[in-house]
Image 1: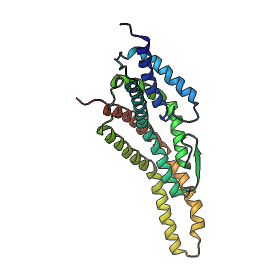
Image 2: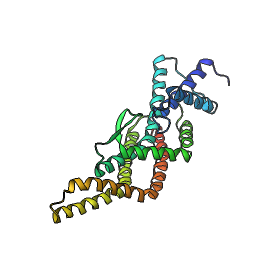
Image 3: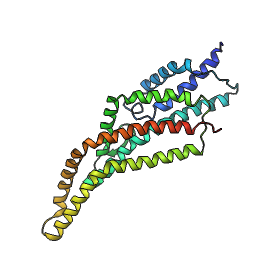
Length: 258
Protein backbone atom coordinates (compact mmCIF):
# COMPACT_ATOMS: atom_id res chain seq x y z
CA UNK A 1 0.00 0.00 0.00
CA UNK A 2 1.34 3.38 -1.01
CA UNK A 3 1.49 6.09 1.63
CA UNK A 4 1.76 9.81 1.14
CA UNK A 5 5.00 11.73 1.42
CA UNK A 6 3.77 13.57 4.53
CA UNK A 7 2.89 10.33 6.30
CA UNK A 8 6.25 8.80 5.42
CA UNK A 9 8.06 11.90 6.68
CA UNK A 10 6.15 11.91 9.97
CA UNK A 11 6.87 8.23 10.47
CA UNK A 12 10.57 8.85 9.83
CA UNK A 13 10.62 11.77 12.28
CA UNK A 14 9.10 9.64 15.06
CA UNK A 15 11.73 6.95 14.48
CA UNK A 16 14.49 9.56 14.33
CA UNK A 17 13.55 11.29 17.58
CA UNK A 18 13.54 8.04 19.55
CA UNK A 19 16.98 7.15 18.21
CA UNK A 20 18.22 10.68 18.86
CA UNK A 21 17.04 10.69 22.48
CA UNK A 22 18.68 7.31 22.96
CA UNK A 23 22.00 8.48 21.49
CA UNK A 24 22.14 11.53 23.74
CA UNK A 25 22.44 9.59 27.00
CA UNK A 26 23.81 6.10 26.34
CA UNK A 27 27.24 5.40 27.89
CA UNK A 28 29.22 5.19 24.64
CA UNK A 29 27.37 7.37 22.14
CA UNK A 30 26.25 10.02 24.62
CA UNK A 31 29.69 11.32 25.55
CA UNK A 32 30.44 14.93 24.73
CA UNK A 33 33.62 13.97 22.85
CA UNK A 34 31.37 12.70 20.06
CA UNK A 35 30.21 15.70 17.99
CA UNK A 36 26.50 16.45 17.84
CA UNK A 37 26.62 16.03 14.06
CA UNK A 38 27.89 12.47 14.48
CA UNK A 39 25.11 11.63 16.95
CA UNK A 40 22.44 13.05 14.65
CA UNK A 41 23.98 11.30 11.64
CA UNK A 42 24.10 7.94 13.42
CA UNK A 43 20.51 8.36 14.63
CA UNK A 44 19.41 9.21 11.08
CA UNK A 45 21.29 6.20 9.68
CA UNK A 46 19.64 3.86 12.18
CA UNK A 47 16.25 5.41 11.36
CA UNK A 48 16.77 4.79 7.66
CA UNK A 49 17.76 1.17 8.34
CA UNK A 50 14.76 0.31 10.54
CA UNK A 51 12.22 2.40 8.60
CA UNK A 52 11.13 -0.37 6.15
CA UNK A 53 10.54 -2.86 8.98
CA UNK A 54 8.22 -0.68 11.04
CA UNK A 55 4.50 -0.89 10.17
CA UNK A 56 2.72 2.24 9.05
CA UNK A 57 0.51 4.07 11.53
CA UNK A 58 -2.31 6.56 11.18
CA UNK A 59 -1.42 10.13 12.08
CA UNK A 60 -3.74 12.83 13.32
CA UNK A 61 -4.15 16.07 11.39
CA UNK A 62 -3.82 18.07 14.61
CA UNK A 63 -0.42 19.77 14.80
CA UNK A 64 -0.34 19.68 18.62
CA UNK A 65 -0.99 15.94 18.70
CA UNK A 66 1.82 15.37 16.19
CA UNK A 67 4.18 17.54 18.26
CA UNK A 68 3.20 15.64 21.43
CA UNK A 69 3.84 12.31 19.69
CA UNK A 70 7.26 13.48 18.56
CA UNK A 71 8.13 14.70 22.05
CA UNK A 72 6.93 11.42 23.56
CA UNK A 73 9.19 9.43 21.23
CA UNK A 74 12.12 11.65 22.18
CA UNK A 75 11.44 11.11 25.90
CA UNK A 76 11.04 7.38 25.23
CA UNK A 77 14.51 7.26 23.70
CA UNK A 78 15.98 9.17 26.65
CA UNK A 79 14.26 6.83 29.13
CA UNK A 80 15.58 3.72 27.39
CA UNK A 81 19.08 5.20 27.27
CA UNK A 82 18.87 6.21 30.91
CA UNK A 83 18.31 2.59 31.86
CA UNK A 84 21.63 1.79 30.20
CA UNK A 85 23.40 4.76 31.76
CA UNK A 86 22.50 3.92 35.36
CA UNK A 87 24.68 0.85 35.84
CA UNK A 88 27.70 2.57 34.33
CA UNK A 89 27.21 5.32 36.94
CA UNK A 90 27.90 2.71 39.63
CA UNK A 91 31.56 2.87 38.60
CA UNK A 92 31.71 6.53 39.65
CA UNK A 93 30.07 5.62 42.96
CA UNK A 94 32.62 2.87 43.58
CA UNK A 95 35.44 5.24 42.74
CA UNK A 96 34.05 7.87 45.12
CA UNK A 97 33.96 5.37 47.99
CA UNK A 98 37.52 4.18 47.29
CA UNK A 99 38.80 7.75 46.98
CA UNK A 100 37.33 8.71 50.35
CA UNK A 101 39.07 5.76 52.02
CA UNK A 102 42.41 6.18 50.25
CA UNK A 103 42.62 9.91 50.89
CA UNK A 104 41.80 11.05 47.36
CA UNK A 105 38.51 12.63 48.42
CA UNK A 106 39.60 16.11 47.34
CA UNK A 107 41.35 14.93 44.16
CA UNK A 108 38.81 15.11 41.34
CA UNK A 109 39.10 15.34 37.58
CA UNK A 110 36.87 17.14 35.11
CA UNK A 111 34.51 14.89 33.18
CA UNK A 112 33.88 16.46 29.79
CA UNK A 113 30.66 14.48 29.37
CA UNK A 114 28.82 15.97 32.32
CA UNK A 115 31.06 19.05 32.69
CA UNK A 116 31.42 18.24 36.40
CA UNK A 117 34.17 16.96 38.65
CA UNK A 118 34.26 13.18 39.10
CA UNK A 119 36.33 11.01 41.48
CA UNK A 120 39.79 9.99 40.32
CA UNK A 121 39.32 6.24 40.75
CA UNK A 122 35.78 6.48 39.41
CA UNK A 123 37.05 8.06 36.21
CA UNK A 124 39.66 5.30 35.95
CA UNK A 125 37.04 2.57 36.39
CA UNK A 126 34.70 4.25 33.89
CA UNK A 127 37.31 4.68 31.14
CA UNK A 128 38.58 1.13 31.63
CA UNK A 129 35.05 -0.25 31.47
CA UNK A 130 34.22 1.72 28.32
CA UNK A 131 37.38 0.49 26.59
CA UNK A 132 36.64 -3.14 27.47
CA UNK A 133 33.00 -2.57 26.53
CA UNK A 134 34.04 -1.45 23.05
CA UNK A 135 36.49 -4.35 22.78
CA UNK A 136 33.65 -6.78 23.53
CA UNK A 137 31.44 -5.10 20.87
CA UNK A 138 29.15 -3.73 23.55
CA UNK A 139 28.27 -0.80 21.29
CA UNK A 140 26.71 -3.33 18.92
CA UNK A 141 24.50 -4.45 21.80
CA UNK A 142 23.39 -0.85 22.42
CA UNK A 143 22.51 -0.40 18.75
CA UNK A 144 20.63 -3.71 18.60
CA UNK A 145 18.72 -2.74 21.77
CA UNK A 146 17.28 0.46 20.27
CA UNK A 147 16.44 -1.38 17.04
CA UNK A 148 14.67 -4.14 18.99
CA UNK A 149 12.73 -1.51 20.94
CA UNK A 150 10.63 -0.78 17.84
CA UNK A 151 9.44 -4.40 17.82
CA UNK A 152 8.63 -4.45 21.53
CA UNK A 153 7.33 -0.89 21.76
CA UNK A 154 5.63 0.39 18.58
CA UNK A 155 5.61 4.06 17.66
CA UNK A 156 3.40 6.38 19.73
CA UNK A 157 2.39 3.55 22.09
CA UNK A 158 4.71 4.28 25.01
CA UNK A 159 2.95 4.82 28.33
CA UNK A 160 4.72 6.42 31.29
CA UNK A 161 3.10 4.62 34.19
CA UNK A 162 3.84 3.64 37.75
CA UNK A 163 5.63 0.47 36.73
CA UNK A 164 8.21 2.51 34.85
CA UNK A 165 8.93 4.59 37.94
CA UNK A 166 9.30 1.44 40.03
CA UNK A 167 11.68 -0.03 37.44
CA UNK A 168 13.86 3.10 37.54
CA UNK A 169 13.90 2.99 41.36
CA UNK A 170 15.01 -0.66 41.24
CA UNK A 171 17.72 0.33 38.74
CA UNK A 172 18.89 3.01 41.17
CA UNK A 173 19.06 0.38 43.91
CA UNK A 174 21.06 -1.96 41.68
CA UNK A 175 23.41 0.91 40.83
CA UNK A 176 24.19 1.59 44.49
CA UNK A 177 24.55 -2.10 45.34
CA UNK A 178 26.92 -2.71 42.43
CA UNK A 179 28.98 0.35 43.33
CA UNK A 180 29.38 -0.85 46.92
CA UNK A 181 30.27 -4.37 45.75
CA UNK A 182 32.96 -3.02 43.42
CA UNK A 183 34.52 -0.90 46.17
CA UNK A 184 34.11 -3.41 49.01
CA UNK A 185 37.36 -5.45 48.56
CA UNK A 186 39.57 -2.36 48.42
CA UNK A 187 37.67 -0.62 51.22
CA UNK A 188 37.99 -3.71 53.43
CA UNK A 189 41.77 -3.78 53.03
CA UNK A 190 42.04 -0.05 53.77
CA UNK A 191 39.84 -0.53 56.84
CA UNK A 192 42.25 -3.16 58.17
CA UNK A 193 45.08 -0.73 57.45
CA UNK A 194 43.28 1.97 59.47
CA UNK A 195 42.82 -0.52 62.29
CA UNK A 196 46.53 -1.37 62.26
CA UNK A 197 47.47 2.31 62.27
CA UNK A 198 45.13 2.91 65.21
CA UNK A 199 46.86 0.14 67.18
CA UNK A 200 50.26 1.63 66.32
CA UNK A 201 49.08 5.06 67.48
CA UNK A 202 48.06 3.58 70.82
CA UNK A 203 51.26 1.63 71.33
CA UNK A 204 53.70 4.22 69.93
CA UNK A 205 52.28 7.66 70.79
CA UNK A 206 55.45 9.41 69.60
CA UNK A 207 54.78 8.40 65.99
CA UNK A 208 52.87 10.87 63.83
CA UNK A 209 50.37 8.38 62.45
CA UNK A 210 48.57 11.00 60.36
CA UNK A 211 51.69 11.82 58.32
CA UNK A 212 52.67 8.17 57.98
CA UNK A 213 49.16 6.82 57.45
CA UNK A 214 48.25 8.83 54.34
CA UNK A 215 50.98 7.46 52.02
CA UNK A 216 50.57 4.01 53.56
CA UNK A 217 46.84 3.99 52.81
CA UNK A 218 47.48 5.14 49.24
CA UNK A 219 50.07 2.42 48.70
CA UNK A 220 47.87 -0.26 50.27
CA UNK A 221 44.91 0.91 48.19
CA UNK A 222 46.89 0.72 44.95
CA UNK A 223 48.27 -2.73 45.78
CA UNK A 224 44.82 -4.04 46.73
CA UNK A 225 43.36 -2.70 43.47
CA UNK A 226 46.03 -4.60 41.54
CA UNK A 227 45.32 -7.77 43.53
CA UNK A 228 41.55 -7.65 42.94
CA UNK A 229 41.85 -6.63 39.29
CA UNK A 230 41.07 -10.16 37.95
CA UNK A 231 37.73 -9.92 39.76
CA UNK A 232 36.98 -6.81 37.74
CA UNK A 233 36.07 -8.91 34.70
CA UNK A 234 33.28 -10.55 36.71
CA UNK A 235 32.04 -7.07 37.58
CA UNK A 236 32.12 -6.11 33.92
CA UNK A 237 29.92 -9.08 33.08
CA UNK A 238 27.41 -7.91 35.68
CA UNK A 239 27.50 -4.37 34.26
CA UNK A 240 27.04 -5.49 30.65
CA UNK A 241 24.27 -8.00 31.33
CA UNK A 242 22.58 -5.67 33.78
CA UNK A 243 22.63 -2.87 31.21
CA UNK A 244 20.85 -4.98 28.62
CA UNK A 245 18.33 -6.23 31.20
CA UNK A 246 17.65 -2.66 32.33
CA UNK A 247 16.92 -1.63 28.75
CA UNK A 248 14.48 -4.51 28.23
CA UNK A 249 12.74 -3.92 31.57
CA UNK A 250 12.39 -0.20 30.81
CA UNK A 251 10.86 -0.95 27.42
CA UNK A 252 8.43 -3.52 28.83
CA UNK A 253 7.29 -1.14 31.57
CA UNK A 254 6.29 1.40 28.92
CA UNK A 255 3.98 -1.06 27.19
CA UNK A 256 0.24 -0.72 27.59
CA UNK A 257 -1.06 -3.21 30.14
CA UNK A 258 -3.83 -5.52 28.83
